[in-house]
Every structure is written in structure tokens, then in C-alpha cells.
Length: 164
Image (cartoon, rainbow, N blue to C red; front, side, top):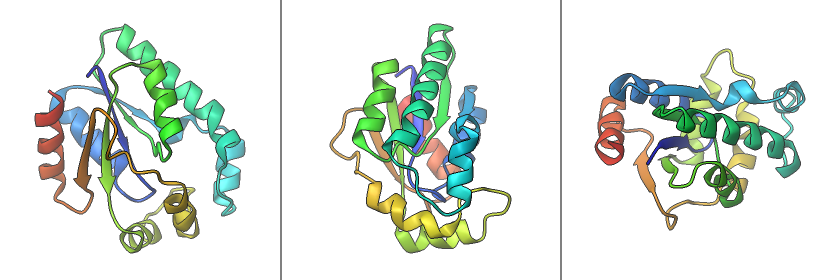
């Protein structure tokens, strides 16, 4: 697999795992949140869930970033919620054979984590909408599911063994 997306609901640890994985395997990190347009950030900050139209341009940009990195022979990790199958398929269209690491946790665990997170635009009130949108990737190709509450080192080693 040329690239991996670390995915899941808010609070599952996408960025933390992605950064640690990049350090472990020497890959480049793409932080999906950094590509949201200001309109999306304003919406989420106000506690309004994004819809498919809000996410379409964002996902297209992320697909372009992935494709550019892979074309340049870079190993790359993208932190992106990728909650719905069609979102993952948009990213797969940009990079065939793309891998996904699904960080699983319960709604209560996600609410607890997001409630204690500082400096992020995503409020805990949007957790319910995230789980409503979530379509499990379990039956899709090139997907590794990992408990998000496992120790970070164990998560990273598990992903590295699967990916590399």
C-alpha cells in the first residue's frame, strides 16, 4: 500500500497515531483538519455537523495531496475521519490500493476524549452526529481495525507490522 489513512470519529486519536506512525516508519504526515475550508471550521465550531456537500471539496483536496505524495514516491499517512464508505472511495479513487486504519472506540469514550481536548474546533456535542454518519469499514479491502484505547506504542507497532 502506498499510503495509509488513519480514520475514525473525533477523539479517536487520528493525529496522535498518525504522527507517531510517521516517526516510526519515516513517512510524511498530512493532517486532514488543516485542509478544511474556513466555512467548515465555522460550522463545526458552532456545533453544526458537516454534510456531504461540505465534505466534498475537502475530500477532493485530500485526494489530490495523497496522489501528489504517492506520485513523488513518498510514504504518507493521512489523518482523516473518512466516516462514510463513499468518502473512503473518493480517496481510493485518488490513490488505488490505499490502506485504512480504523481507530475504534465507543461514543462514551469519544465524548470523554473530546471534552478534555484543548485548542480544537470540534466540540463534544458533534460526537453523536459522527457516529450517526459512521459506516464501518470492516468488510472493505486494505483495512486494519485497532482499538483506539490501546497503548499508543502498541497501536503504532500493529500498524507498522501490517503496512510495512
